[in-house]
Amino acid sequence: MNFERIFNDYCNLLDKHKEQLYLFQFYPENLNEVKKTLKSEENIYSYTFSTIRLVIPKSLRPNHSIPKNLGSVEIILSIKDEIKIKKTKKNFIEDPLNKLEKFNIILNCENSHYTSSWHLDRHAKDGDGELPSNLHPIYHLTFGGYHMENLQREDSDEFGKSLILRAPRIMHPPMELLLGIDFIFNHFIPKNELELLSDPAYIFVIKELKKYFWLPFSLAIAKNYCERISINNEPFSFDELFVSSVLSC
Image 1 (tube, rainbow, N blue to C red):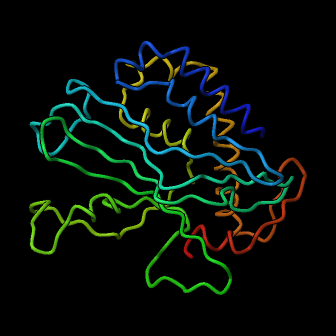
Image 2: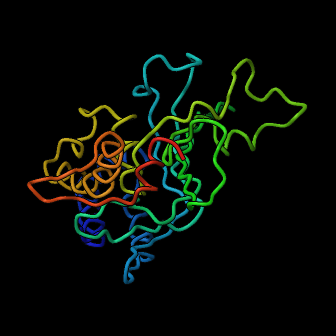
């Protein structure tokens, strides 16, 4: 996959639907700044960004929200540092990302102190790395994460009666910026409120992205339970450390 081409296609599709996206205070123009940082090197694509945001109006906030009297919800996607994507080798399954740190989805409520966050972690280690003491898939979602932990003080009760732990770490396929934006669109905006989500061209681009990032992840899971994997009569080889890490590092 040519990630530069996919990035351009994705930006063009968001621009096509920008009038509807503006209703969610999402500005596709911001991705043009990210695009300027996109680099293609011998074996790596890389880019940087700080935050991408949108706002879900009160009328469309998710059902069963707690507390019940919430207003609109601001959603921020932030990543600490640059993202590095591997240029994959034919029929070789390995971790599709070389670098992903502090991928955070932060939710803030209008005119209130209510906040929450999800953290997607990439817990990579080399063959001699220290083993974690609990189940720890290489890619996992954690509720709370750095955002909420940094708000807490030893002598405060910032989150009332809520109990927030790092566990369980919920296995999830890897994401970068574009899949992160799509994750937010699909989890927080009803499909009938955003025509982009049913645009065949958009669906195709997301399918390509998921094939690039999620097929290796899926095949690595499967490889834990079989000796060989072939697709269309073509055998695949695997990075065995990645194979074991998808279940637990």
